[in-house]
Image (tube, rainbow, N blue to C red):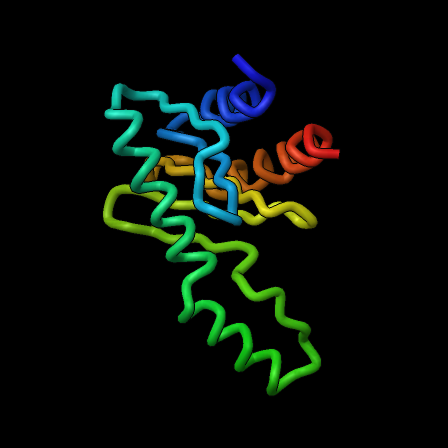
Length: 134
């Protein structure tokens, strides 16, 4: 298991209810590492996670919203969303772009999971990801 996979493994096992953790390359949407707590078709899940990450964080609509806000305020646009939280009927979805890297952390959890603890674990994992690329 490589260091990126170790980070994903630690995240997926850190909090009860986390279903999967992935690190996604924001340049091309490739999955750098992933870990699943339950049995899944890994290739299919990785393809879906990759697509969802790129569509949510780097879609043309996201860029347009960010650019519009940038024009109306002193805010400087990064060209993509930095952090997104989505709640569905059964699950929570956490997406966090890692500053200074073109990498995002994508976590899927059951709704029984503590959102604050998951955000805390993401913040703990970010320096570990950065260390691997510096």
